[in-house]
Length: 351
Image (tube, rainbow, N blue to C red):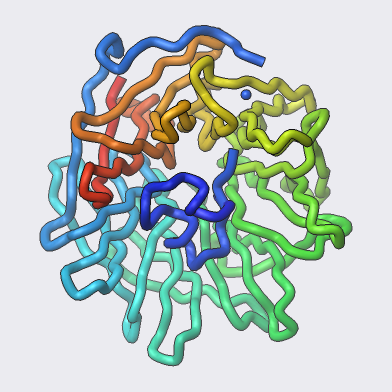
């Protein structure tokens, strides 16, 4: 995820929360847009107890993870169970904790900052055991996603201030990698067969998407006309979603099929900024877009291309971060909305 959060004009957004490294940016019109009132869906809003700001980032089996800020401005990770109860997660000596991903077993991954101001990746097993993840030579590490097998993807900075991706297998083995020509690399996502997607910048600071196959082969890609490409999510079948910047400064969403075919699209009411954040195994995509007033709205895009807009009640800006693929929760999306006072709250949209 990953460009300057000020782009979205809603205060403390995800990019600044992801230690200001992640950049979520931003579609030929496909389908049609409906109003929020026409969407036959249920939206549940939530905040952990004592939260003054809530940011949900992942969902699996209806269980949500993310982070919240308390009244003392301390950031903690959380898990929201199906019954609506919350568990706060903080590794030992953590001064800041956030969780980005969760798998079907309830294991979560994220990052924390210790009392020496060093960031570490971590995985928390369903029994509550927390294991720190620091690739060899790492001076800063973030674990960004975990698949159903327990394999983890993330990225780290070495002692020379160079960024690299990594995959951590369920047995704890960590394999660093770089896309060819990479000078900087950002957050990544791993699917259930072990394929990884993300983005990197070349020596000219131009962003490109990539996909790393389970055998380690890395393939770069860009939609036609892209001046900067960011890939965010990959489903089990290998379809990837993300966005790209054109030469005129507008962001468009895209879906890249497993065969490499890229479809670009723009929400009908989007003004220069549309984001495809996540894609379900069914091919349904979700994300958000900015309208002419500069306000953001969530959307879901069906395989047919039909797009439906939605916003939680009282939302000034709506941002979508993840979609559930689990049986019984397929198509459920989570994200955050900003109220009129600038505070963030979590939401879950059930089809």
